[in-house]
Image 1 (tube, rainbow, N blue to C red):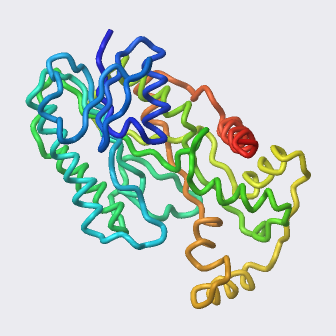
Image 2 (tube, rainbow, N blue to C red):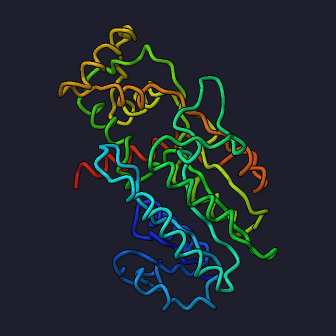
Length: 319
C-alpha cells in the first residue's frame, strides 16, 4: 500500500481524487492551508506550516493540486498568482527532491499554453506556450521551474494540463449555464457553432491512478474527455436533466456581438468576455495521455460525464 500526499486535498478535485485513490488501496495524506480532519479517506493531514514535519520516507507520490484559481472577475493582484502557483510549487518540489518519493504530479492548466485555440484545430502538448493572463503565465512559470530542476532516472515528473473540469460538487462555469437553463429561457446563442473540450472528474481520476500504476515516461500530459461538446449540446443536456425540451434562438451573431459590446459599458448580463467564453471553440487533444496509459478511450463519455454533474446539481437543489 503506497502513500500519496495530495496538496489541496480539501478542494473539488482533491476530494474526488483522495476518495478514488483510497478506494484503490492507497493511503492518502492531505496537505492544505488549514488542518483537515482524519477520515477513512485521509489517514494523515498536514498544513503548509508543517511541511517539514511530514514523514517523507513513507511517501511514494506527491500530487500538487493547491493553487490560485483563475479569477474571472479580475480582482486578484497579478503577483498573487505567482506567489501561490509558483511559490507553493517551489516549496513542495524542494521537499520532494529531498525525499525518497518517486513521483511528483503537478496540476497545471491548458491556459498555461493558450487562451484561444483556432477553429478546426486541436491543442497538443507540442504547442508553443503563449499564455495571456497572469493565471496562465504563473502556471507556465511553475512548469518551467519544474522542468529546469534535475531529476534522477528512477523518478517521474508529470505535468498535467486539464481543460475545464466538472463533476459532482463543482462550482464552475457549468453552474452558471445551469442556472440559466433552470429558468426555462431560450438559449439565445444557438447561431454560434463551437466545440469545447471538458474533463470529467471520473476520467481525471482514472488518468491519475493510471499514471501512478503504469509510471510512463516523465512529461507533459493534457487531460480531456474524448469528445468535445458544443454549448448548444450542453444546453440540450441541461434541458434533458430538467425534464424539458431544449429551447433556443438563432439570433444574428452580429446583433449579439453588438449587444455584448454594450454590456461592456452597462450592467447587461452579456459582455464580450462572457460571449467569448460561451461561444469560442477550444478543443484539446488527449491522445498522448491515452497512449501512455494504453487506453483507446476514457471510460466515461463527455455527455455522460455532464449528465452526472447535472444530476448532482439537481440533487443539491433539494438540500
